[in-house]
Each structure stands twice: as structure tokens, then as C-alpha cells.
Length: 341
Image 1 (tube, rainbow, N blue to C red):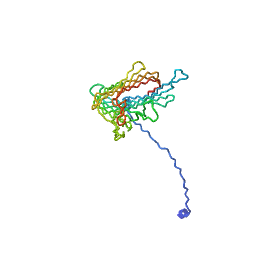
Image 2: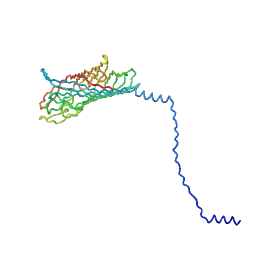
Image 3: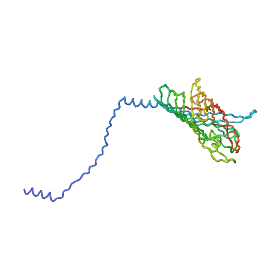
Image 4: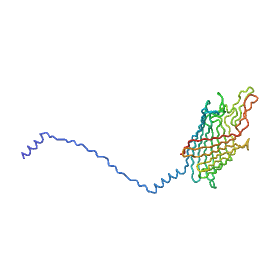
């Protein structure tokens, strides 16, 4: 008993020493379990077929062209002038077609210049045309209730050549600009190479944003009012709106292998002051494909607009007035590059 008590007292008096051991934890990477999502084969096929069908409903056409003609002389006893001509053209088209309706959009832009020895640059062609039409199928095959918008203008100033320094332009950007908005019926087969639009109700707006040209009565606008001294007392308005009947169409046909003819024509007459006077706009071109990148083109453009006058007379107050419309004709022949994608 006494021995046990001594041992207990000895343990209570002596300091207790404890050794603390530091433990370094080991970090384990997280465990990620991949969960598979089960798509049925039918659902995948349906999705891909839907995307394919959506793409097939769009018809897309893009064409870039650059034609060139050049004449050069060296010690040529018959005489002549060195010259070079460039003509660039762009055509973009998007057509969306489903069972009962279509939406067709086309942008056409042409610009040509000519350079002759001893002369400045001359413009030979200048056109910007945007067309958009929407149609809903009628009960007759390939016929649609349709509405169409057409906008035409040019890029830069046009002059009457030969010109002198200081001559004013006879046309400019949006001088003129033409906007047609019509509703009617359109024959539009699925292939899109032929179209016929008949509109008994078409709104035609003519814009001449250059005040000098508008005051002269250019492009069908009324002439400005002058006093006896020849000073303008009232400027002409810069736009004119009328309502009329429009018939337009286009046709594409392959005459021979790699030889294609394009025709585009429109006839318009207004209902009020000059019903029966028909404005005509007819473009025709024949493209002869040489290879995938080279082609030759022959083109013509015939226009008759009762509002565009060519003869000029001097009024008693000294002002100039244009009168008498004429048939306008343009012809193009060139060989050049064409890229279709």
C-alpha cells in the first residue's frame, strides 16, 4: 500500500512531457464522373434534316465581273488615240422559297470608266439597282399575290461630253433616284429563271436631291419660278410622286452550251396626266463563257422616259427649259474576268 502511494506521488510531481507529431495532409485530386446523355438516333437525324432543309430553301447567287477593252497605237499612219476602258459589275441574289410563299432580293451594281490620251477620266456606265419582292401563292400554280420594291440610282456625277472645266453635272447620286412600290400578281416558277410581275397599283417616286438640277426641271420635276429679271422666286421641289400601272419581267435562257441570254424589261404608265405614255426600260445581255473565270459579254440597254427631256430652249426671262423626250440606247462589248460563288 505504501509502495503504491509513493508511485502516485512521484507521477504527480514530475512534469509530464508530451511529443506532438505534425501530420502533413495529402490532397487527393477530385473524382469527376462523366454522365452520358442519351440522344436517340431519330432525334439527331431530324435535327440535321431540318438544318439541311432550311439551307435548301435559300437560293444564293454571287457574281463579280471585270471587263476591259484597250486600244494602243505606235507609229500608226492612219492615226488614232490610245485608250483603255474598265467595266466592273456585281450581282448578288438571295431567294427564299417554301411551299406557299417566296422572298426574292437582288442587288446589281455597274461602274465603268474610260481613259484616253490627252483626256481626263470619263464615266461609261453607272448603275445601282435593288429589288425586293414577296409573294404568297394563289390557287394557280406558280402564281403569287405579290408586292415588289425597286430602287434605282447611280454612284457619281455624270456629264455631257465633251465637257469644259466648270461644267455642271447633268446627273448625280440620287439625282435622279427612282423608287417603285407596287402590289399585284407575279408569275414566279421555282427555278427562278423566269418572272412576270403585273401591278395595277404602283407608286413611283422620283428624287432629284440636287437643287440646281431640280430647278431646271430635270427628270420630270416642275421648273422653278422666276421673276422678269431671271431670279428664282420659288425653288422647285426635289421629289415627285405618281401612281400608275407597271408590267415587268425577266427571262434567262441558254442559247447554246456556255452561251446564255438575259432579258429584263419593264413598262410603266401613270394614271393621271399622261396615261398611255409608256416608260420603257429594257436590258439584254449575252454572256459567252470561255472558262470558269473568263467570259465575253455583249449587252444593250434601251430606255424611254417621257419625263426625261433632251431639247433645250430659252424662256423670255432667260431661263433654260428642257423639252422633248428621246429614246436612250447604250451598247457594251467586252471580254474579262468573272467569278461566280
